[in-house]
Image (tube, rainbow, N blue to C red; front, side, top):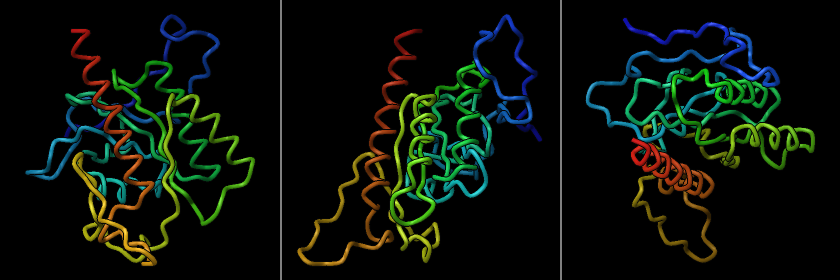
Length: 213
């Protein structure tokens, strides 16, 4: 079975000396063949690269129709190798995401394009200042960023039950004084907003690549 492979350490000729490049063990592998997908599944436009286990990739994959899980590797063999790094909003998640962003900056991603960082809330409420500042640093390395708010109702849902965002998605009309719709009936606002902007970024990258050919 073809699998992702890890790249050798970058040489000083390929990478500027000032750039902090993660050690080989801290880099995500690079797929040298299409990412394994279930038979008959759609062709993704966006790839979700989880920075660590439990980042929220499975939930986003269920709610974002144009996206798919890259199985923790860079999808370099895909026609649309457009990636967002997904991480939980905690120290472990942000540090792991930062390493992937540095790997991309070093050019050790097989030609994939990094669209940006998606952080997923790890708890209700606002994160503390230290985490927020850390996120700003990682977002700068990623080039763009989006945040998924805490949605407690997701904890009670199976992925297959969730409402799905598509490029023509229109949220159901809100009813006055009504409780927010469950994620099985409507895509949560932060999820839908991020999906639309990430999809637009992927489209821009696609047009740029075609223009450069």
